[in-house]
Image (cartoon, rainbow over all chains, first blue to last red; front, side, top):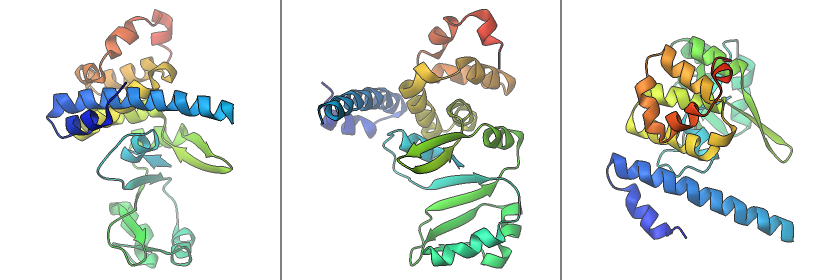
Length: 43
Length: 173
């Protein structure tokens, strides 16, 4: 599970850290997409 | 057609600046600019009558009435990359509404070419999110032609993914 608070902290760090943030943020978005897709099916 | 940073935002990137860069075909847009007033927008750096001439030289800023901060930045397609982007634009549908955006492969390449940290972050975001749908040979060949091939490593596992493509597929773009 990706911790949103931790993600926000990473955003403020150096370039390497921010690239890691981008990678994790993408994973987070992909997860949310799956959740949203599942929600749509239920409705 | 929408280009640059806002495409990353459309695909979920969290970003401090949210200006919308619009690339348009070079032609007379006077009648288009005249509709702005009715729609509640104003041109920041030109009068409506001189907007077209301004676009020949620079970018045109557009904001909502009563605001100074730009919402849109409009520019004419001038370079070969601009022309290529317009020719291969992608339709994005929101219900019945449509937007046109630049081809994602071109967008990633262009961001690598610009090369600032913010641009690399945008490129990486689009790459990581959409890698399974992208034409990697197009990104690779554009980067090779413009001699920014080394920057491809900033897209994380680009080279590993690219190695997995068949040789004849790599040449198709």
